[in-house]
Amino acid sequence: MLVSFNGEIFDDIELEMHTDNRAFKYGDGVFETMKFANGKINFWEDHYFRLMSAMRIVRMEIPMEFSPEFLEDKIQELISAKHQEKQSCTIRLSIIRKDGGKYTPVTNEIDWLLETHVVESSTFEWVETGLKMDVFKDHYKPQGLLSNIKSINCLIYTVAGIYAKENELDDVVLVNANKHVVEAVSSNVFLMTGNKLTTPTIESGCLRGVIRKNILKIAAKNGFEVEERDFSPFEIQRADEMFLTNSVSGIRWVEYFKKKKFGFERTRELFETLNQALN
Image 1 (cartoon, rainbow, N blue to C red):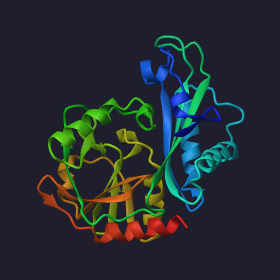
Image 2 (cartoon, rainbow, N blue to C red):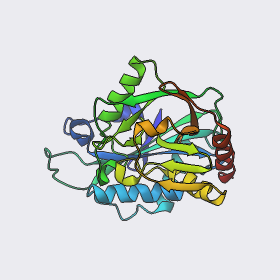
Image 3 (cartoon, helix red, strand yellow):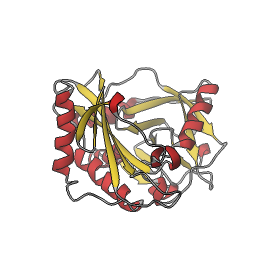
């Protein structure tokens, strides 16, 4: 499989990882997951600026050439090399601090890796079967700027995902030390109560999601009352609908949270409007 490493295209079996690799030893990196469809990257500007913000927060040195145009060209180069121009695919751009050092690195310069994987649909696909969810209580999601970025240090999500699998759940809700809802394993969380759309605050520790950002804008333009606030898992059971968002799936509706069963009428409206925003 072809990948792009520091802007050069290789077969992935040719890439070698040194034992001083900081991603391997310390989880010292950030990443961005995007979707390419109909010849373009969905919400590219939002993804680019979120990535630049994450790199600044973790004190990585941003190369002078890292303009939106440069990175978009490199993504298109890899897609062309893999003959995926007329297909849809997910894109992962990983940024890793260069090898060396212990907890304190010897440099803030970076290496970067691009990967693409073909997916079936150019739009987000509505899934008729809703998700089954519960709360993950074994560990709390931290709060603060480091919690709002896509770090390659994903241990809490891994453990939460294992918990969901062990309990025959599709996903779980993560909470912070205040026992407020934060997010799901790989998605932001939304509740719908009447005409009011609610999602946890950025300060709760949730990812600063690209689809989250766009859903808030779309919902406000379409007459929904939108609010970002802290709430407990108990409040979920008072909602009419619940859904999750991320850049690969768009919107997935939740059918069950514990024993509470939800509908999806208003969620489906937002889903259709989100798909229209891709055009």
